[in-house]
Every structure is written in C-alpha cells, then in structure tokens.
Image 1 (cartoon, rainbow, N blue to C red):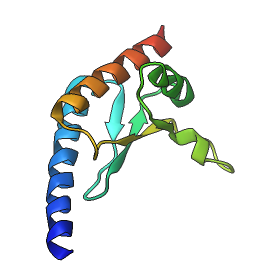
Image 2: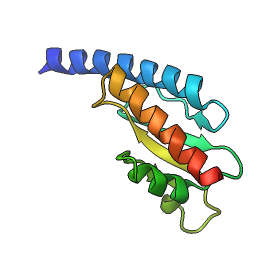
Image 3: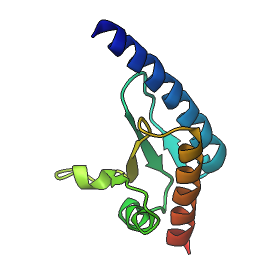
Length: 110
C-alpha cells in the first residue's frame, strides 16, 4: 500500500502542477488559483464581476463539472469561485476542459 500511495502522490503532484500551468496560461485574467500542496481539487477564485453560479451552469452545458464556491457560504458574504478537479484528467483532457471553461466564462460575461 505504501508504494501505491507514494506513486499516486507523485502522479497527483505532476497533474496539479500541469493544471496550474494550463489555468494560469489560459485564464489568468479570470481566475486566481488557491495555493495547494496536495489534494485532487483546487479552488479558483473568480475576478470581480464573474458569477460562479452562472459559470458553473454554462460549464455544465459544455460537460464540465465545477462547483460554485458561493454555495458553501451561509452566514457570510459569498466568495465567487469554483472548485476545480484535475486528478482524473490527462494533459489533453485538462487543456480541453480549461478551454471549455474559458468559453463558459466568456458566455457569462456576454
């Protein structure tokens, strides 16, 4: 089991780094990614004026499943962002998914 965990940590670290590079390259004006040293998801904070619920709905029409961060806020002002998963994707899927997410954001901005 230990070898498996080490292997998966290495794979996820590589995917996390690649995902960060792709998002930063393509969506730097729309999303700021939270720092992450581990895990299989990352939060992307949307720039002012971008509605996370509208983006998640537009993304769903493009077969991209993201969760709006604002739905996790109940007693404070909602932060606009998206919970983004990357662990199950290879490089091509990441690039395609980020392009579809970019199209969803463009749609919501008019």
